[in-house]
Image 1 (tube, chains in turn green, orange):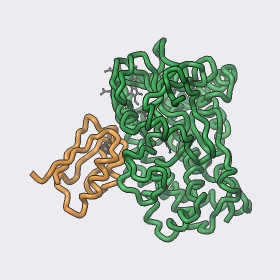
Image 2 (cartoon, protein in one colour):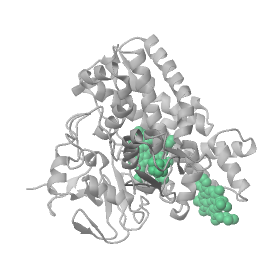
Image 3 (cartoon, helix red, strand yellow):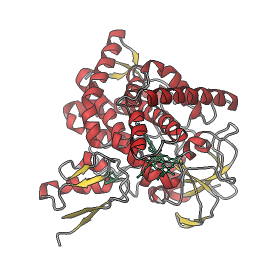
Image 4 (cartoon, chains in turn green, red):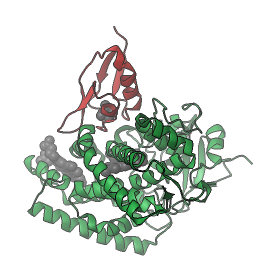
Length: 404
Length: 66
Ligand code: HEM
Ligand code: HEM
Ligand code: SF4
């Protein structure tokens, strides 16, 4: 029986053989079944895309959005509401305002601004490495560096106290739940998160500072318009979640990939100018980025040689697309100097990751600091024993045990 | 090589500036791309091609020396 026959429905996400390796099914699907029928954790059906061209086409098409609020859109997660993609967060901002919103928020994420932030990010990374070293080897690099660094950066940008980061981590995990939490747990956590952020926004309105939230409020006032409370709340919650989980996990996976074959680490030590392209290659090769990016098809569309009817929910598997042999030579191999690297780890088109310059800056800063400070860094367990985070929309490693 | 940019398509992600800072910048007000040099010198061509390739919005257009 071939994968993805009409009467054969795959359960999605497809389990992986090892933490840093892709499931063998991806290559088979790209080859033989580029539009595959899958069953989501909710039990609902969707179509899975695994080829680069198809994924890029759908992501770049402005008619298809990730607002899965149509009555016939698939629910994603196992809990009743269907999880983050079906929640109000994605819907607080009508599509008409999307570009305006991007441009308001986007000025905080320009490449120039990131270059200015970089010395501060590196200093924080140095400090976290000092603390990790003081605690002695072996250490969990994810807990010591991967997680705290992006949380510090985004908290600073939003003007919220970093000391509340354990709360943020829990709120964000419940929001990103696929199967891990019950609806009651998620509702309770999201109510707390919204109340916390609303209080922070009210305090910021009364007493503005030089953070992103203050500036959004001021910019809207200058334009003779009160920023809708709902939009501010969605923006700040969205940035807090987007700004730390993805990057925190990516730091762990990137360092894991580079250490799992130590000749890679040695190549970087020998030539640190490879850091920029190595970060891009780690983003491309990440076999565990999480669920993928859903889109609701609003009009019949020809994709991958078949017509996908309106009302279908498609899931774009960015990681499978990033390993498409038709686009990337030796796609299964890590080439630390690969240029250009047109991977889709940050999506494509008008909704592509707003924080990508920040994410890149954080990943490059971490790698620079680690190469400089801990050239003898190595995994403290065999790569085959690394374990994945399960049951969330974002993928990562449970821990990254290292010594030096 | 002739470079042009489509400001309407640009989503302000800044990938072009990271790839080719001599040719692209972003407006401070909203992050939209600014073309610094529409006819970049030979030694910048590889970086400019990379910028056009990685632009998530396909907002950078390259033409031949007309
Ligand atoms: C639920 C989401 C939103 C709704 C329903 C909404 C609604 C509106 C409306 C109706 C206007 C026109 C007002 C007028 O001309 O008097 C407007 C303008 C504006 N909005 Fe929003 N908005 C939303 C989200 C946002 C967000 C997220 C931002 C910024 C991050 C924002 C910033 C602005 C600004 C700066 C203007 C003035 C634009 C100008 O005059 O050029 N809005 N909004
Ligand atoms: C390695 C780290 C990251 C990865 C792999 C990543 C990936 C992505 C992807 C694939 C999308 C597209 C979603 C879609 O098309 O529906 C996206 C959107 C987004 N990301 Fe990221 N992201 C990362 C880090 C960040 C950071 C650090 C921030 C901000 C502080 C951020 C903020 C956003 C926002 C606001 C959007 C929505 C943009 C829109 O709809 O216009 N991300 N991200
Ligand atoms: S890479 Fe493309 S979308 Fe991003 S700022 Fe440059 S032109 Fe705009």
